[in-house]
Length: 152
Image 1 (cartoon, one colour):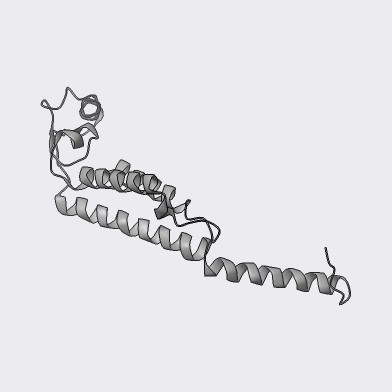
Image 2: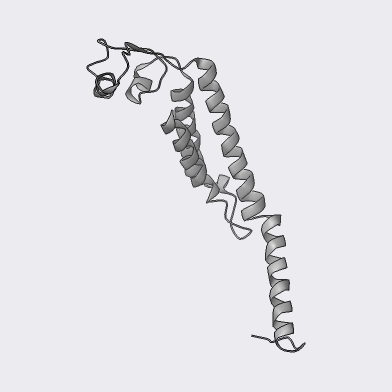
């Protein structure tokens, strides 16, 4: 589960940091990057949302029950079963409803991150704060020089 959430954020970062500013074309003109993002996000979504399958088992996605004795050949579960203080015999799978909710939260996080990058980091909020900082800087120079603006 952690892999799916974190990897989705890494994928989104790759797209977001390619937004650039007004001197660059939109990232979607970079079709290899956009295609890779779409395929990788589809694969990650498949891992998270699919029922039990061999690919998800490789990534240890919790979409099936793990039973002590049956899954001891897997070193991850063997370590878990041997190191726990409780008498666990079965580790229950996450329900498909819970996995879907995690996927929704991941997508919402990706959208919020994209909106933050577009409107705060590169957009109107940045422009407003930059103008405000320049105005304050001019005012500071004016008052420090007795009303004369210093030109650098």
